[in-house]
Length: 133
Image 1 (cartoon, rainbow, N blue to C red):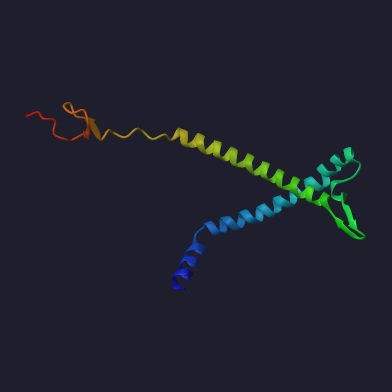
Image 2: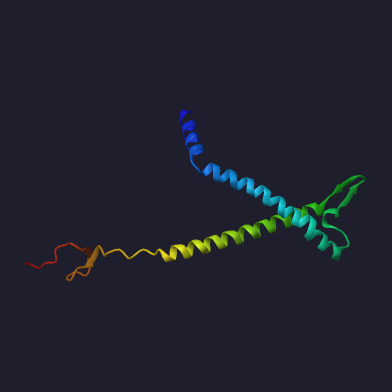
């Protein structure tokens, strides 16, 4: 148990926890923006073609029991837009990182092996060559 607590304390003391917390807060705020985009802009525009807002689509099963499949469609649209935005952001970040790393290419390391002139196998560069100097 002490080991678990020690590991947890080390985890909390790293900067990653704060980064994760900030990411979750920003993600929550961004989720509300995307939800508003879908609910207030996309659904009404799509409703022009279907005659009603997607959120209002429902199926009466029995009496007052309804299946609100329009809200599910809105949630799927929210997810797809969020996934598209995150994919685009990650693609841009990976592209930028690749360009930065491309500029910092490492020089090739000096060879550590050579071919033996007699048996043609790979040997250490400082191996005896068979010559007497």
